[in-house]
Image (cartoon, rainbow, N blue to C red):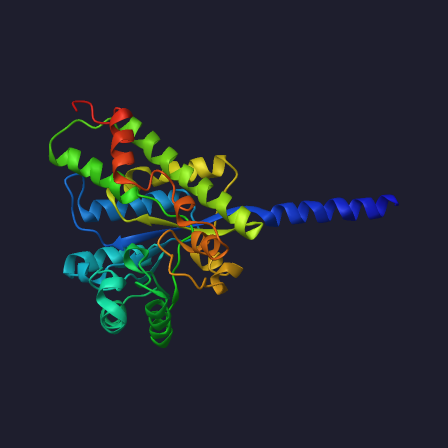
Length: 306
């Protein structure tokens, strides 16, 4: 084998390695525009998130809107996100489980949200199910997918699930109870917990797909994100991850691979793995459990006078 052939084989191996281990991820935020809390007002939260994402030079972020939160005050918050160049998408009107509402009432709920989102700029045709409940069984899931397609939507799936909402609620509850929060410990806990979930689902992807896809991370527009998502972004980049836009991530081939299983609650990668025979018990990170997280939160000493 001559030197030129060796060079091309080496270049090809590098290309294959880079594709298999892409380590690219997009940021999406559910439940916007979340109301005021004991830690900060909704306006403060929006401004913090915009400032953080802009300073970090995030190419785009997608905010899935819980449309019954929209009123005269919160409408300005959504407009601030779009004015900053970020995008909105549909997270239903009432945020009720599709499994409970059913194949007839759930699309009506989505359409109600669609009408409220219509006046806004930068709305992308993606829908994400509350709680990642795609339907109670395969028949309902299939019916709802067709209904959403008829409404013009693509599936706003996630590949990385987590309980960031519960971490945020622990902080908010502490603030309501006038307890002292050690924000440095809280920052460390948030970053480490969420980063573990990213690596967990990426490992599942590499095992079930043979590669690392362009991931879509499910976060929430909450206080913890406003306080610490910048630190998560910095940690991801330090670990070799690249932040991409949701539009780019949704071009990954898994966007066209809708698994024919009832298990979608942990996201697209877990559903694909389940369709290949991996049991549900192996597709959920330990931190996706309130008891586990509460014990870890207490052990981390985040609440000083607890």
